[in-house]
Structures are given as structure tokens and as C-alpha cells.
Image (cartoon, rainbow, N blue to C red; front, side, top):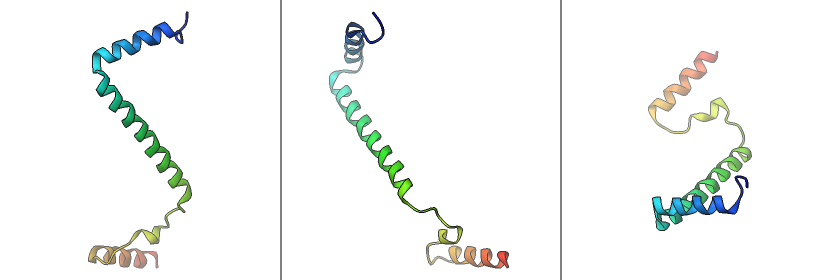
Length: 77
């Protein structure tokens, strides 16, 4: 009789259904599965993308971005 005994898991399941209801547990399981899939996708996409270079982080034609790029290049001289 350990933690992995089927009787203990049956009691845990019955208590969870009584507390949350079967409909809520069904949605909770689906949400948990989707969050795990999203986490795996984000970890895999991080591995595939090249590291960001400091000069490549300015992406836009706004005045602030242009000013920041100009200030960065003059500071490096």
C-alpha cells in the first residue's frame, strides 16, 4: 500500500470531482494540455532563432528609434 495504490487515486479523483465538478475538471485538463504544448513550442522556437544583435534591436521609423540609433553610434565612436 503506497502512494501509487489505485484505491488512493480513486479517492483523490472522487474528492476532486466533488469539489470542482466534472465539467470544470474537463476544461482544466484541456487548458493544462494547451499550456504545456505552448510552453514546448516556445522553448523549441527559442532554440531555432539566432541570438539578437544589439544593433538589430532598433526596428522602426519612429523618431525615438532613429534618435536612439544615432545616440548609440555616436557613443561608440
